[in-house]
Length: 228
Image (cartoon, rainbow, N blue to C red; front, side, top):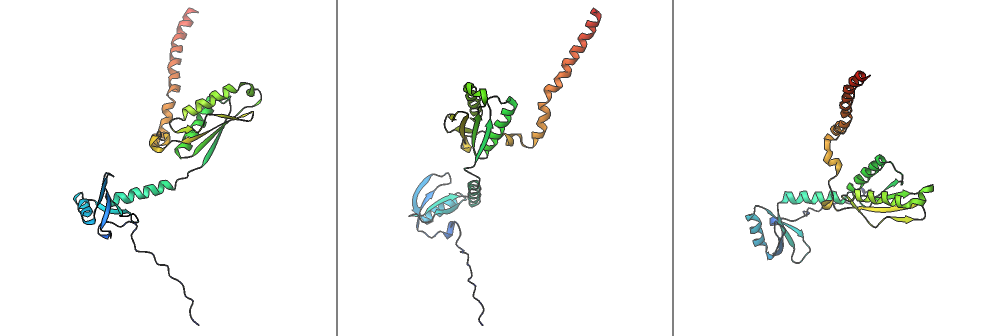
């Protein structure tokens, strides 16, 4: 009885990007090391130009006529390629929702704003929903003021797709999309870094100022006692 036949899978030994002497075309369209268009030239001239800059000639569009090659350091090229691949794998199109009310406490609103900033820095859209309850429906202008202020606070990180809109009689909605990374402010979490835990005592400095005020009150007490 013959043994079963298992098909072998062979990996292609063809490199992902041909470079230098592995390039087969006689003529190539060359992009310089500063990404300028250098036009079509013979492969030998392109290789000589790359060698004069101590760089590599990398084929980036093999199916073009003639093939497109770029003069660049191969290690840097691979790093940029992997970075772009990682960026493309980041979660996109995700939507987070934040709910607020017209009578929200300022501290709670600041917390909601910080959450929205982190969502936007993670390339997520944020839907902000404000719900009117009971008598709040008679003063919708207050809800619009709260919503517009929150949208302004997020302006360094995201932009509203459209002005806040009423849905029905009690829901005010707005959708905020993240700005491109090159136009977005830095993530506050990254700015704080590992020293974020050390920043809390700094915030508590105003509390330390209270004993100073109490010292002045103690200094006034003898005067009061003398007057008595």
